[in-house]
Image (tube, rainbow, N blue to C red):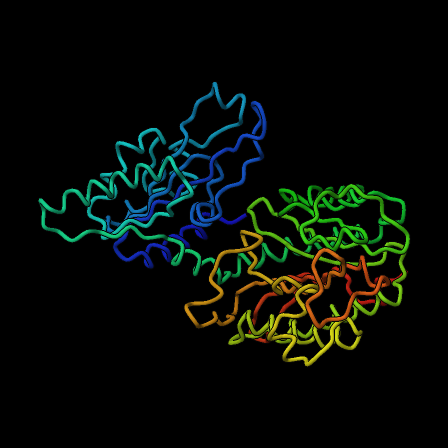
Length: 439
């Protein structure tokens, strides 16, 4: 966990980017699961990044137009022993100041009467519309009142803008303390994959393997899985977001596991490994695995500062299509197949995504026509895959799929840090070489 200084530095950087606009960043709220039971609480990542405050229904104000010592205001749930005995302790307004560095703190029920005064004098309002309806109604009323007053005052309208471009650009480049946490998430996640690979046997249920993985996450002090774990035997692996995890593992099939942990401070791991359940690849499984692994390793070698995620994807696609051509699963000219997307019935997704506080982390991939260049401190996944089934039609001009290939679904995914030397694979402790996967 980070100390108070880390969050203070983040706020200073954010406030500097806001110019004279005031930002309103709400926390997450509790979500009902059924009857009187709530889902486990998961804080809004933007709110957490700036505050480290892990309670629901709070609102943070960032006010660069006000004097130093009055720029970070938190509205929080007050201390209420009668509620805390049921739901756990709260920090309250004193804790918001003493433990989380707020300049000023108020009970959340005072937000409607105080928000307008805090926003007065700002050159704009930075607020994410469409996500927080209760707070949004307050912000829009204040902004609407401002617009109504313009005819009387003759002043120019202040803009209502999203804080996302400033904040997400900041979150995209990870600081050293964040990378330390991401290495920890990668370590725990890789250990869980190794445990699962050594545990899995024909005749088991996918859910038993899921239990081994998620037990390790919890034993190691993680919050739990970062997303719904995918434990997909055989043809189930050809469903990209398969999460039923309730089928028997058959002798001769492959097992695809896509799972990663989320730490208590929300940094995530995201790993996919595919291996033979009985410890021995068939010739067809091995051939496809070699193509996927070669595609992934080529893409990782292509990662360096100045490169971009689209070029990394292009490298993976080119190696993948070359391999599928060699196996007779595609037919035609390499460049034409890529240009036409005639491979997408076998490989239908992008090669990776940003990783951080969110599994599919924030940050643009393009600004207009220009791809975002990779920089030191960015973390992305690299996860090409091949999925051979009858679920998608074979494009015209491409060969029909022989039965011997059907039901093979393979993805290999690592978490990769961009550094000065190029690519630092954070998840390399999870085995992926063919020789080590066989037993």
